[in-house]
Length: 156
Image (cartoon, rainbow, N blue to C red; front, side, top):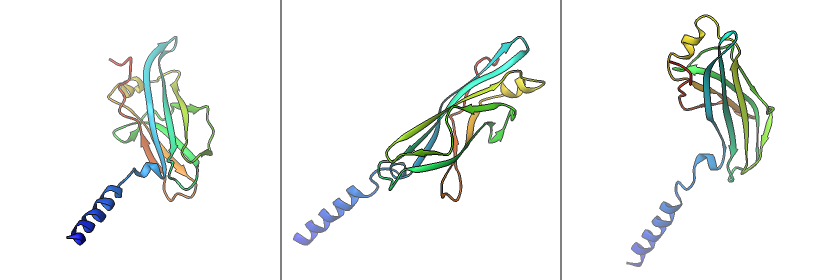
């Protein structure tokens, strides 16, 4: 009887400790948040303006901070780049050190001062994502990131 009770107690301890936390608690997590796009007008016709925030977080259980060596972003629809001439600029600089248990945000501005030819139609053809990748020092492959689908404001 004591053996059965002890076996159940040990099983309960292991079951309670298995799966605690998430992968992000011990590694680099990267997300694109607060993405917004607007098709507006100016003296030259239609224009594109927008913003997106890339958030980089290193979990508290990571062995150390992590150096991010590359961040890329672009506009996509259905996994394909659209409007490649859009400028996506950030005030942050890469490479960037993200401390253990800390986070860093890079705010991107997105713009095309004058949409040409079929670009307004392409922009307004459906939801858009801000997508890209984040590479950390020593990684064998970049981590893919994407915003939630965005409905472009100002489109019919």
